[in-house]
Image (cartoon, rainbow, N blue to C red):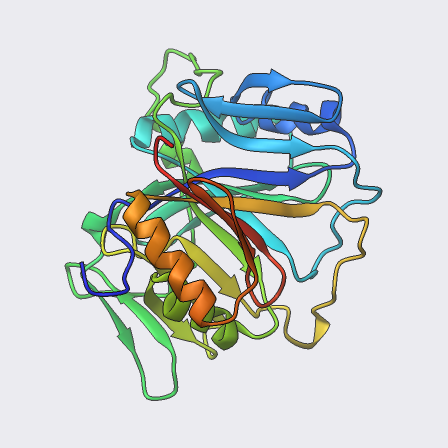
Length: 299
């Protein structure tokens, strides 16, 4: 691990979202996506897989997150097998909800939103289909497959072909795979270069795609390069969300050790970034106000 870089073992933990109505949100997160209800009280609902909390819903939002708002674009739940991904696609198709599906070459993705406008991605990583990334002089990004063919990474996914992987039994698993995990989080942004200075220069993520032409910037670790992403696709139509809107409350970054947390705390202080330390956790926010909590794994 290079000096100042986060460990490859770094991962994302629970993502907290504001919603207008928890029972309505559960029709997506639990009944369609298949997350298990881990815990619930009058104002929150925890959902997860394999006994681990992945999503925490908070009531109190007064209106859905407007489209093209600077805030959450989507939170991505990753599954580890294409069969689990096919079951997720079958659940979405049976729900009657409007969803979309894309082939990014490095992954295959399904997209849907909850009733509060929080974007959701279900993702299956396919790194074996990706050879390299090429950036032209004008900033355009092309993804190159092992056979040499170039891809935009935005092709439509062949959903009927995906569903054929389930065979003819008609059986569809109603629960998300137990080893599903939060693979990345993606926000709409105003100033992605400034955000990258924070996530890369201060927190210690590795830079990945940084292209105004493509309209996306992201960063991650040596093991998982795409963990925190920002897009500027709304361009001049981007608006600040109303203060009582649904959206991202905070997300969690799980670090490999207390020593790594201490190093991040030192970098935050040196950069004059306001933060609050409490035991094995740090609470802070990025330059656009997206809140995050850094914790030690297992702490």
